[in-house]
Image: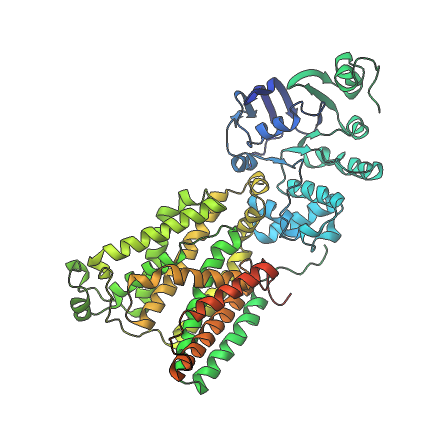
Length: 249
Length: 334
């Protein structure tokens, strides 16, 4: 794993074409370690596609993805994971036949730890997301809200330098979303990772993120602090139609 | 630190091997020769199901190729264990450099395992990119290819004819040792880092890749290890039955082993043990009944195929009532 705190993830002019559809067009962004970047936009604007391109699940049609000086464009997902990129999935993908602890442990093992070390790391990650009490339960038996937390713990257990969260608040109520906010806010500072989060929960996004990047129809329409983005005319138009003046918060 | 019961392989090892050892001891002391032979078959079958479990149980990818590896293990061990005189009788066209070669039985068995593993290693890597129906078809094709080679490579196999003249080295305790040894190996493997990664990839390939698991690689290792175990089982079987033809390593044996895995529950080692015992018991029991019926001439015709019918019914019932097998993914004693 690359252990350089000065590293930055660069996404450079990424274009992704599907048959008859341009999902992303010339998207450029960078993610620094220790920061939380929000990637927002209406449904179908290309947010998940961008995460899939960065983490190797899709190959871009054009453009590069770099971690520091290492060009990881087109690498298979498991190699990209070894560079220190971890992710969660919009549709939850847990190892349902394994216990919660094993789910998290296997990520630590795959990052190169021995089984005893991985056990310790997994318990740390579970504690971090407040799920230690679930350790021995089979992941297939978890209630929905808990599944998201286990996915975050699994991603954390590999000690990523960049963490990608795809709609971690989907389906959570306001109270659960607040708990998620409390859990995520200190992570970049404590672990030194850079975090990119996609979500439609604007209450969460506006309070959590240091910077926002807004996509619409696969193109960047705005970048800036939450406050700047909230007042941007194009963003308001994309989200609400041109009649409204401000994003809800 | 919270106290958590560590997932350990040895309590299950003891719990599963204990009753098997007692059974072997009772049959050894009080059972007749027929019962002893049935038990040897049981332990060889157990070794084979464990080979299947190591790959299929942990990876979730079905392999129909295992019995091909059994055949490779059987023939290659025979070539190394038979005396030059026996070879001169049974294998007239054997390559001359192989005729004088003779090694101790245990070495020949290990060679059988290694040959099977080598073949698996060579053909396995591209196969491991497949899963689901594609893997079933490809491994089935591999079984057919191995079978065709065994039938036609008459220099080393005597072609489709029976190869005879092996010594009956596989005693009850040899088969017991193999069954217990690989039982422990399978339980240990499951809890290794690789075993854990393999089980994760069985549950979700995309998530497994996202945490850095090279799925093709971990499957390949398990495939090669499983072929070794199955090759050893084939070598032991060859030196139990002492004469056989390539037909022994084809569809009936394949379905027997797969039915054991399915009936017991392939996701756990305990399931493999339960399946091997249950299916061997059904198989031998029904065969006994069939023989009794035929000897007593109750019917004016010969009854045959009863064992296959009963096994098929058992398998269908299990697939309907408990699709993941008697034990599913549970390990005893949980």
